[in-house]
Image 1 (cartoon, rainbow over the protein chains, first blue to last red):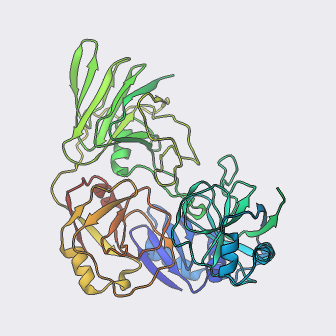
Image 2 (image 1 turned 180 degrees about the vertical axis):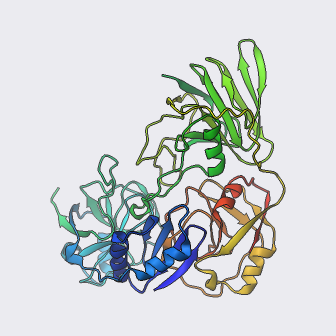
Image 3 (image 1 turned 60 degrees about the vertical axis):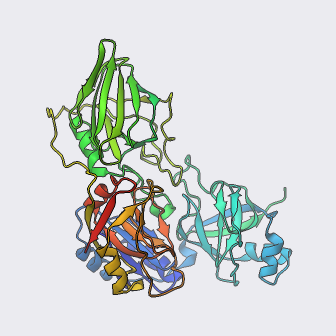
Length: 202
Length: 288
């Protein structure tokens, strides 16, 4: 683990893998640290110090928190109902050397975990563990991806929380809101949560 | 209940407070006033709790009218201001609380220096909070809509005593080149010493495409030591992110929660406020 400087209020922890990020994130959340925010990402966790907290003291406290292995089965599970009628289903399947039916089956069979959020409020980046999911983004991003779109890009799958531009391959649409201000927390897919996609008929 | 009617929002006016800290792990950025010190000072001068909402007026032009008498103050970028009443027009002073009577109009001209003026009303702007804040986040779309002509903004009530200050002396933005401190960022090692010397040795010109997300800088681009993509990582206000063009973007309040370009340096927290007052065409220098 490397601790990198990030201005007068931040420290950036650099780790080797998403699993290590998830384990550290869980451990740091439970440690009593003077932080305003913990922001997990692909290989890093940003710690935002409380006002007045000393960064060297915070770095020392972080090093003293014992690392933990990410235990997937301890996390809460979210079920996401999906209609697999996305425009890129066949193309994405082709890129993975599969047919559309097998892509749908694997997407539901995969053990997904929310690694981190970003891009938009409630947009979770989900990683799998059973299959290889390396799919390039679309060469030309769409200017309008509908809210609820279930999509694939790189090693991740995700659910668009609202209409936005986007370059991910569209597999279908979720029948739940990924971000709803009436819910607490408003984000459905929070870092560490397990996710299962379930096909529903229309 | 007291309210302010917006007759003209000027080029861009938003409601702001200290934003939504602590929710970045859900993809929710902090947002909030770009010049936090000026926002805090405006609230203090009318006896508001620091967390109450003010108007962030970008390049002046705001015209508002209250339906009951209100106590108002402006901070940040100094604008020529007048209050238009039934008995004529009178000037109003910056950093000095003044009364606007029911039906009178407060009119802000363009700022003489600086970019963002904060207008605090005693009682604060009581628009509906979203996720614990009344700040408009222009990147994520959270919070109240951008202020538009015809909006009626409710004013809250405040139990705090007035500070009894007539005029608050405070440092004001100028049009001179701005000098701010930087410290190495997490990806300083993606850049050589030549890039660091370019970063700290030249005057950067503020681009006209700057906004609440970031200040875009023009100058001699920073060369990178390494190619390849960075796995997106969390960043904060004050980050100097370097896209492939080599021209840094200084992140302000509505910056994305994570970014995929290397951060070569950070502007320290009190100085980010000063950078939020930079106008297009103005020069800024970074001192290590």
